[in-house]
Length: 441
Image (cartoon, rainbow, N blue to C red):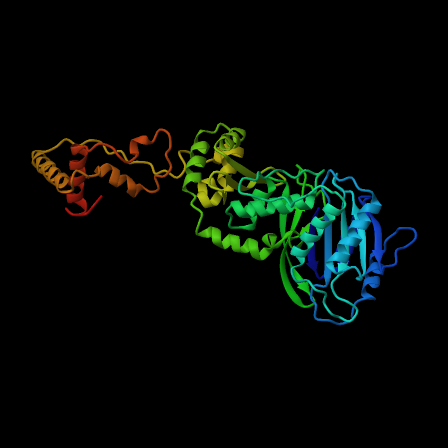
């Protein structure tokens, strides 16, 4: 049996969450302690809060007095509601909360039925109950209960670097799936904006929104996560980041933004996308070719069908990149023109300079003499550098810009061409005439 303990400040929020399960016929109350339950079973959240407050001091220093606990037996353990209640009460007794006000719920929102308990960790005198090593003590208690009642041993699902990330299953435990996905995405991928973060989450039917406001005069900045279906429609109550874990918080995600700035190298992704963009017949072909390169592209559209956002998710490098990070020719406007408005689309190969072709010039006698001398100089330079001389063409190519993009048909200008004395001599003549004998082209 796995126990999950959340310590928080909002009693109303914990009760409202369980009340919503009841409203959807996905939960029911099994029992309570020091809490008056209505005979008709209709739980009034405000009245429940009053019941709890009756056993709590009016003032106190404890900022997080609420415990929201879920007990999750193994799926093979089929227990009656009475057995669930016995487990919950015995668990609380052993944990030291047996005399506290609490209410026990059974949830049936997934195939694996489980228990939720809402209680408080402050007694009537305002003293906080012992929470030292509470998670360690909880684990020991669940093990004892498994042995006492002959239950299957259930372990918390461990996330490893090899754990696959899957789309949300609406029939499963949505909160757990959202939490696991958010954790794994944060562990593996690098992103620098909330838009890029949402792009990778959207692959798994999750969406995130920033929330800003004031509570009791204090500013707060948080995140809220939404579980969605294939059409982007919300399928469950949104989850505050605090309900998922610290890894999902605004502070944690903002920190990942900052760390990613120094770790992301766009060159490998840029080469792949440039090659696909050059050869793609249409948008569908573009998406399919990128998919074959292990890159997902997330396109965002206006109501009129115009592409206003594009994000590339490279699963090989684990980088999430807005198109503009690769260059303006990969931005949303450029992609929209390329596939939705071909008349305005840029022609030629992305991000590659066009070479200048100069017609050959007939050598003069003076040039012939210079040519002979330049060949001698070149041979001497090659010998003095131990045979490691690079071709001047390869050197001058680097002046044209970024040649990380290996575009088909432009291999003529890739580094490593053989040395050509005639081209070398022509270059030297142009230097002497225009820029002086020692200026490099």
